[in-house]
Image (cartoon, rainbow, N blue to C red; front, side, top):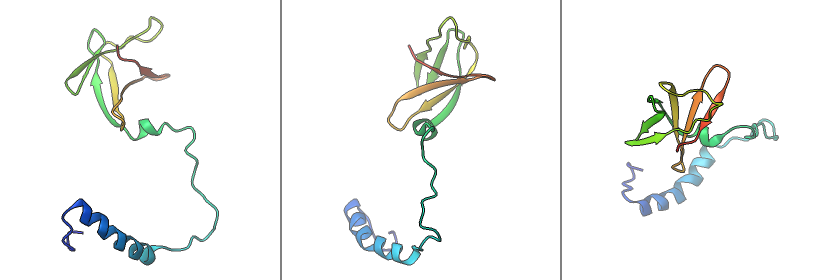
Amino acid sequence: MRWDNVRSLEEANAYLETFLPKHIERFMVEPVHAWNLHSPGKGFDLDAIFSVKVIRKASNDNVVRFDNVHYQLLVDKNDTNLRRKWITVEKRLNGNIKFRYVCKHHNYMIKPH
């Protein structure tokens, strides 16, 4: 688009109206088999897969700091102690923040207070 001096969103949308049919015609090939071989997305947490993940260490009082915000993690008496543990913080595409602690035998989702 730079070579065609496209400089605005409106110009880009107009450009795509002419570019896409030519591109599809040039590169499209018929599949060898007509059946769909894509795997179903069932059983996958796509929100978790497409999230930004960072690792933070929980403080002694189960607080995790992320993006200049302190999150107090809720831990049940039956759950593992999270003090000084490494916590994965997931920032999802919709803006939600999720916390995950993974140990050898369990994968915990943690709720902030």
